[in-house]
Amino acid sequence: MTETTAPALHRGEPQGEPLLHADSLVAGYVPGVNILNECSLVLHPGELVGIIGPNGAGKSTLLKALFGLVGIRSGTLTLQGESITNLRADVLVQRGVGFVPQTNNVFPSLTIEENLQMGVYQTPHKFADRLEVVLALFPELTHRRKQRAGALSGGERQMVAMARALMPEPSVLLLDEPSAGLSPVRQDEAFLRTRRINKAGVSVVIVEQNARRALQICDRAYVLDQGRNAYSGPGRELMHDPKVIELYLGTLATDVDAARDAERTGPEDSPAA
Ligand SMILES: Nc1ncnc2c1ncn2[C@@H]1O[C@H](COP(=O)(O)OP(=O)(O)OP(=O)(O)O)[C@@H](O)[C@H]1O
Image (tube, rainbow, N blue to C red; front, side, top):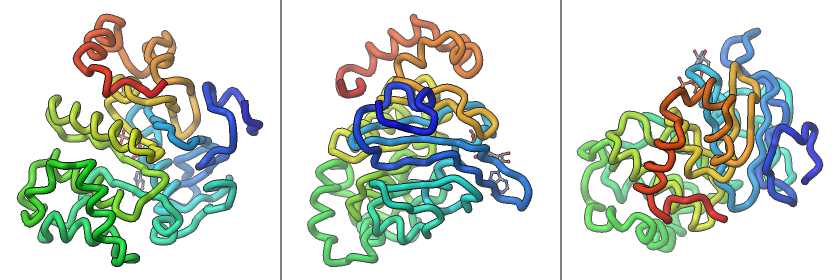
């Protein structure tokens, strides 16, 4: 196991240097009120890591702190070993970090193609090449490029938002509740899309309310509670951990449910070996 400040905190962590390492982050919105209380997370190359926990636990705040949208009061954040603590979001995009917010994540008056152009506004010469790569990942968008994003369904908008975040070729993608507000079928599609992006080589951190579903697709996950790390470990291990079930997953997380979901999902949605 890699040397960390608190080895038990990152159970199941692969060997080697993390791609992204948040160590003991303290952060918040209002002066004097900390939402994150020494919260830590590591993401290794190729991993899909989940953040789950009860409402108000600080999941989205952690993601925003990773993307420079919430000030880090103490603790460190590194990308490939270099400090990125409190760098601005636009600088983080240049450094290879992408972020998909939960809401307001497309420009509704622009077409899908124009939304994707916005993704490479800092490097417009990359547009044609990246468009090809991104449309190969989301072939559903190919014939709809000239449609306005505002006319799309919630699931389609989510897809455009993910596609736009992938345009600058990030090494890390931060996803804030991609399944929020979607029907069960569209939620399944959002999770499959997340796996597809990860399998294409992008390391992903995903915040999810749908904890059980998130644990199914994640290599590892962190359970937050009141801005602190409560549990962590491989996704499927946490899904069957009695403490996590009792506190965060409830009765829905029975083995029967999990088995049914695994059956319905099929092999493409299973965590990488
Ligand atoms: N912009 C903000 N200004 C002030 N407080 C905020 C802001 N955004 C979130 N908070 C507070 O921070 C705490 C954590 O919120 P956060 O959205 O990070 O939790 P979460 O775990 O993502 O919850 P949920 O699953 O309900 O989205 C909550 O008490 C929330 O009220």
